[in-house]
Image (cartoon, rainbow, N blue to C red; front, side):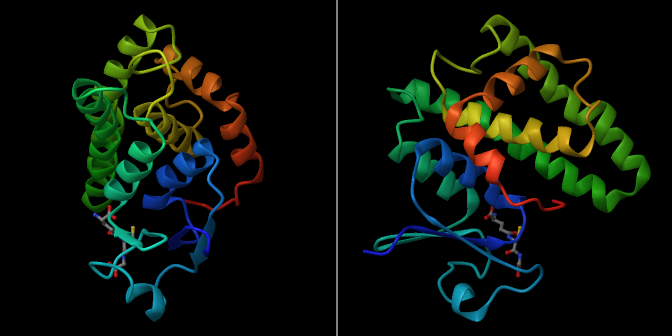
Length: 199
Ligand SMILES: N[C@@H](CCC(=O)N[C@@H](CS)C(=O)NCC(=O)O)C(=O)O
């Protein structure tokens, strides 16, 4: 049987959390990348809505980044051990989607909107992460082992720091969490060989 395959542009974008999850879970997969913009016709034909990311795993064809992430998180035991854990972990993880959505809106809204995003909207979430992480010893956003929420919050912080290394200076627990995650062997290995892309 062929390897699972993740299809996306040659970028982090909406596929990077899935790549981090695959790396953390140690899955052998094909990271199928193509230049932005334009989705190759044979890939578009697989997708549900003509958009990427798209993931193929055996007979399963799965579009939508959140669905792919949740599939991987469930399959690899990163959603806790009961319905409450799962709901809480997803709730924390979705904060990254809120931030990403606000960033996209700010990009369209011009400099003033971007300032508001940087100074008000994103920090509202960072303050919550900061408090929870501080209370949890800066290792996990929920519980005592790495979950889906840790992986995507790490991905979100890491992406922002790659653009502006000062953005978390008021959030030392977020920075400590980021440093801790950088040392997780599977994450460290993935990041050491990750293709460098501007976004
Ligand atoms: N809700 C979808 C959005 C997917 C999406 O907007 N994908 C963009 C790339 S980030 C895309 O495929 N754009 C090409 C197009 O719409 O033709 C998800 O999270 O997967």
